[in-house]
Length: 202
Length: 288
Image (cartoon, rainbow over the protein chains, first blue to last red):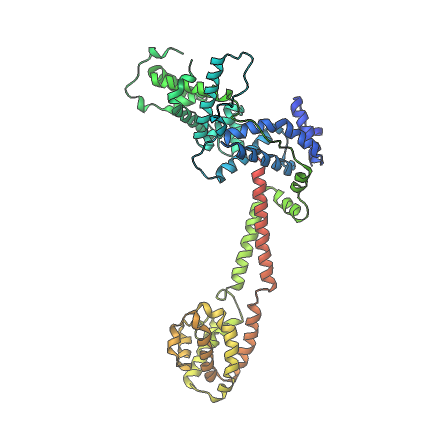
């Protein structure tokens, strides 16, 4: 089994920490793996809940992703642990999207609840906060209506900051397909937000 | 970026390439396409507005928080860890599936295919080369067409005997034994063919049986017609054919045994191949 600590020169302290935890998890330390879970569960959930418009299914997806990661610790061949975990989670989300039935549903029922609000910033300008909230709600609603592939590509590119090559490797498609999905997805979002574009302009 | 009012809407905006404008907004065009896209947004206000909107949407998407917060802790319990770590045969299967996908999938396909082909060939009566059941089937019922040259000659021999000696009183005594063996061996393997006739078999049929109705009989009348035909041919063939029928019948019974070692081996190959395929498929979905 490859010893990641002895052969990998890592300058990034976060990456170094991840590699040490992963190595200890490979040796059987469950606590080390759970430390990794604590580090990345919010990130993974944020990624998946944008891809899977259902909070409970997104939670199941993230849990399954961590199960898979633990079961296949040996499959990690070096590089970024974060990217490795994200790749597993994206695959789990895509599997879920393929398996579930497509039916018209309310993707985020909590958004219809007026009592739900994101945490206010320090400069709690109510008008600006309201506009920001409305803009976020609009973009989230629109994201839920485009295709799964387009949504995954846009989330990975715009939200997570992966480049085209990384997205292509994660999703198992060509570079051109990734670009096409992002461009077409953005055009689809714009079509759906056509009557609310004043929230995004100016 | 110049103000939108400085542009004029071209009458053929519907023909403008929106994807080109989207690619420009994403800044991933080559020099030639970029110049074309820039000319497009300079000459068409709608394209220019689309370009700006796409950039604004991309920024808003990046800034939008997750639509809901995490409500569950995803840490693994010791029970989860024990369940997820394979042991015993599952670990072995996982090890097989952990072999590079480039080799495990072809290996699984090959094993499963080999097993299926072996089961089919080994148990299909028509394709059984040199099966001892063939002569028995041919002589025991009118349903079997000759499967080899030897069988053909034997049938012709029987046919000529039948033509020359339509009734043999001596053979009548051994007819029940011959018919029982023939029915046991000939009825089952030959059921697929019912009472369809080949040229020599039909001659034997005509000589040995008056049961014209069973000629067209399908599977349902196989055993009965087989017995009748066997009785008829037993009269025509005489005691040597009866002894041969008995031996061939026992061999046919052995060949038809579904639990012979080859069948077991081929079935195991099928199961092993499927197991390798499942393990490699699960492995492939995990590895990014």
